[in-house]
Length: 255
Image 1 (cartoon, rainbow, N blue to C red):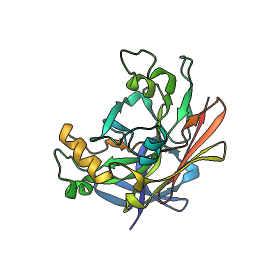
Image 2 (cartoon, rainbow, N blue to C red):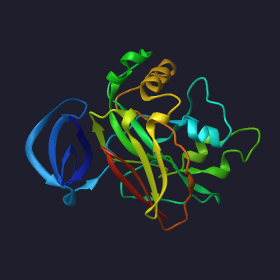
Image 3 (cartoon, helix red, strand yellow):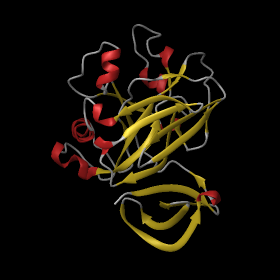
Image 4 (cartoon, rainbow, N blue to C red):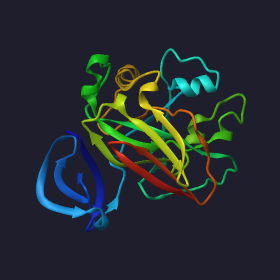
């Protein structure tokens, strides 16, 4: 059964619950460990949406889709290539992505986010999905020009780590098969990306397993699976939306 979990501010408190149409059923306790349903509910119109979790770290993949690799004439990597996005970049659904002072081309990258639900370290691939809580929509915003600006040091962390450069949400959906998902990114209502998740070089279970050999993954941590063809620049005033069937639509303005 698919459930869509979300965090929100309601009557001055941070709460969480499940989205059922426009109604939100409020829970108590721990979202990922035996959450307790209450008799309380509210509606989407009466809350302020927050990021559905607060990750300790966000791991973002590079060159993880065959289609984009072919376009860029890159060989598929032998192991996951990734960086870590900093917590200052996290942005709530509906809030504004801010243009940094640095002048450069700011691009959107619609992606699937994998939310870890159980601590895992050196987990076997066949057990990896047992450690996944659910899936969300994400936009791995990047100042593309910065990455190779200094030929002695590729600046991935800086290019992707500006304030507001990691919007994600609006929910974490459980009970989905990630291999069946499709990521669509719209810029000002025009579809720019429309790609299947099953084109990944490293599918979700392999990503979780291989990354957990390098570092322990904790509940709430998020893996951004990388993006595919259709990445493009945003101009101030643009609306960018990342939509994944079964999860929902993440919408942010760029100013």
